[in-house]
Length: 130
Image (cartoon, rainbow, N blue to C red; front, side, top):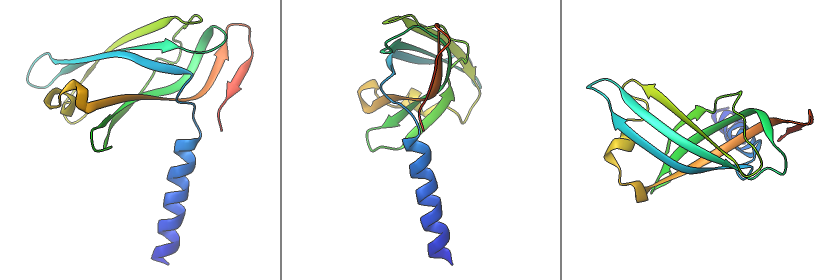
């Protein structure tokens, strides 16, 4: 019984990870800084590799350490507007136990990633990644 649950959990996690596009937008830059003892400010910039302008996005930005452990992810602003080849920058504040590990790591020990599940293009067409 435990084996069945483990197999189902692994398959579900694999399917969830495969159900996104990691190339449509890319993290171009990111930075985190402490504001005080309990708040950190995380800023990221993504660049569009889409063939058309995007006016709505269902996606996430996350980070992996040098050993592949995930940090995050966080949802990209759903109504972010991205022109073809354009960028979008967002700054958010987080409490403890969310992204503070990024403060301890060297930037070259961190690999940012994106996971886009769906987009609405400026022309009204939709693309979903399942």
